[in-house]
Length: 198
Image (cartoon, rainbow, N blue to C red):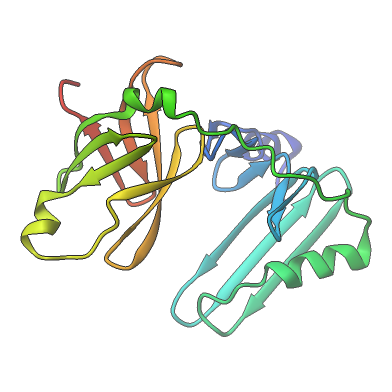
């Protein structure tokens, strides 16, 4: 349905998803990855993929472009995890590469100081401070409401952390303007915090 020219534009990596240094990217409306994670292991197979969830359905759509394979998995249930079904479907029609250790860029506490600062999201003020080998956050607006959140952030990889706010696990990524410089942005899928002074 699409010309080769348009398909190439859609599936060209345009921006990194910035997850722990892994080769994961976004094209135009589709993820363009050089591998995928499953059962805490890494499969070095190029995949174009996206999915979607509502309260009433779940969908996964994967293409392995180098093997000319496409698989779509749909359900009438909301937020269902079909990763095992997808991998089983792929294994039934092709041979996936051997799993390996996930090649994350390891976190380095010596670099955490560049993430410190006060970030404004427009809704929240997030204060980021290093305490020993951890990054901690303080959110005054949530403190005023006695809303629960985890102050110590769990480091996943270089610039990538998890924290829990209102009982929801959130992935937070710190991004600089200049590569290797201090972080200016604190990003989650639903918000972006900009450090004071920028």
